[in-house]
Every structure is written in structure tokens, then in C-alpha cells.
Figure 1 (spheres, rainbow, N blue to C red):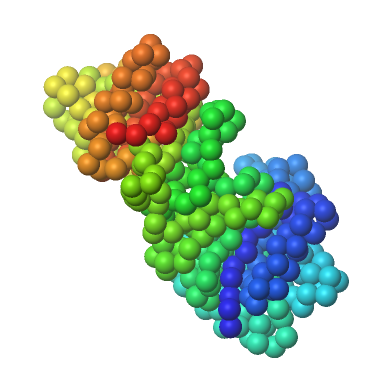
Figure 2: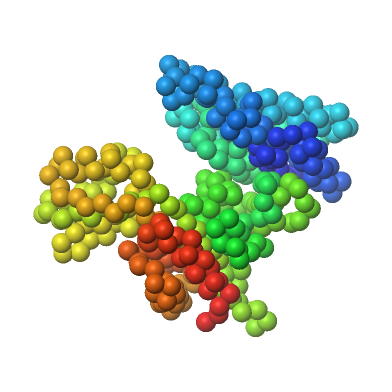
Length: 404
């Protein structure tokens, strides 16, 4: 049995026309001898009748009296409707299809409602359907069931994670993530006009890009596929292009005599940050600061220290919370508002020093003040004022095709 997983997001199943295009991709796979496990998101996006945010709006979320368990019951309906509508269209098109909920498909999760982690996947029911006449099994994404039988949801990007987990469980040859873009770009084309599509990228690099602001695919999905070593492709529902292949091989890792290597694989950005500067007392160090942030469930960037200050950045929405905690503990805090983080991903380790200098020089030439920098083996982060974010991202992206 040759199997693939095909995931279609909300915009890909929003209208009858877009669903027909999705069915075209499924039919192409069937003609190549594959059976398909299709994962679907809820129909449309916020404002559309069955989208997740619309369903939550029915109970005035976040002021609802429903428990998190009950909210999961509510929002899971969107994907269930989508799976059944899609299976109906497939059958009417002459493609034998069966629809399953996430739980029926064997996705077992913990009971962390609204952001559950997948514990295991038992694809027995999927194989039963495929072995008994179905060419396609349509699975409601974004959901599973807890050990006690409760419906759970996987958090934002959960349908990507469903697809990856099912792909690993059924030993799919590859996982196609269909969306409304042609593939993974070197930067957000809405911000960086010269962004280009990547043909290939490694699991590690795309996880880093997704974590640092790229929104094409969820990092948990890539992590799951990586563990199972199942290749992924990010493709457009609206074309026949191959999209971007996510695998162990990256163009950044390949050097040939015929093709010079790019300095890095992508530039991402996150805005709406604020920078904290704490006049450092003896009792507050990086370790204790990290403990405070973890206790309050706040992700921070650029944690660094010198002789007089501790510096770090957090999302603006967490500013008041962290400021109150620190001030109440007797800390002297200065806050710089409206900051943005630019991340350069995929720098070859042996070239990190030279690339870092090239990047910093480029920003200096643009008269962009650098508030902080940080790097690891293959990634460089730069904190700038938000007003300079677009200019900085474009400036760094212009370096993309330079070679050492």
C-alpha cells in the first residue's frame, strides 16, 4: 500500500471551488497509485460560519462560562463539518472516501484542553477503511481524544500537527501541506519584496523559521515529521507546482563547484516586543529571571547580563504582567517599547563570524540602531526599534545571495 498524507487548510476548503481544486490534487495522487489520508481544517477563517474563532464567538469567548473541556467540544465541530463536507464531495466525484474524527483516526492526547499534546497514534481504523474500499480517508484535523474519551484540540496550527503525526503513524511516503502560498519563502513577501521561494529546506531550519515568526507551517508539525523522518512539502492548492521540500537536506548545507552557497536560508521577523532593562541587584541573575518568566508562562528573547543590568525582551501583551512582578520584588525597571526581532536562519557554523559581521555592517550602513544581538550555531538574532523593522529585514535579505 502506497500512502501519502495531504493536509488542506481553511482557505483550501473554504469554498466549493477551492475544494474542487483540492480534490484535483487528491485525484492526481490516486492516478500515481497512492491512497491518501486527507487532513482538513475548519472551513474558512475568522468570520466564516464554521471557523474556530467564529465558533468561539458564539459563546462570547473569552468571557464564556464554558469550561476548557466544553470549549474543545465546541470548536472541534468546525473540523468535523469540514471532513464530512469534503468526504461527500469526494464520493460525488467518484472517489471512495470515509470521514473520521481525530479520535476515530486514533489520535490519543493528554487532557491539556485547547493545547493538547499527542501521546500516540493508532491508525488501525484508518487502515480498516483503506482496506475495505476507501481510496481516501478524510480526518478532521486539530483534534484528538484524551484517555478518558474527552475531545481535545491541539492549539493553533493543530491541523498541521495532526497531518504530521498521522504521516508518521501510517508510514507515509511524504506529507503534503496545501495552503494559499506556493511554498516556504526566504522572508515574508508582504514585508520583504525580494523574497524568493525555497526549493528545499531542512527540518531544523524550517522549525527555527516557524518559531521565529514564519507562519506557513507550525513548528510542532515539523518536529513530529522530523522524528519520523517523513519528508514534507509545503504547496499551493491553487497550482501544480511542487512547492518546498522539507527534509534532512538543505540548500544551505550543500556546496557544489557549480553553485555557490547562499549565506543563509531565510529572514524572519516578530514585532510588538518590548525590551526590559533591570538595574541588576545581587539577588536577581539570569537563572532567577528565567524562573520568574517560566512561572508566569512568558517566553523571552535576548536574555543577557552585564555588570550593571539584565536585559531581555517579551511580547507587548506580557509587559504589564512582568513589570508588576519585577517591580513588586523591588527591581528598578526601564522599558523600551515598540521593538522588533529580526532572525537570520541557516548560517553555516564555520561562517558565523564573517556573516555576523556582514549583517551588522549592513544595518550600520542603513543607520539602523542595534539594541541587542544574540547568536547560536546557525542563527543570528537582532533587536531593533519596530519603526526600523521593514528596512532592517529588507537590508538583511539583500545579503541572501551574496557568497563568501
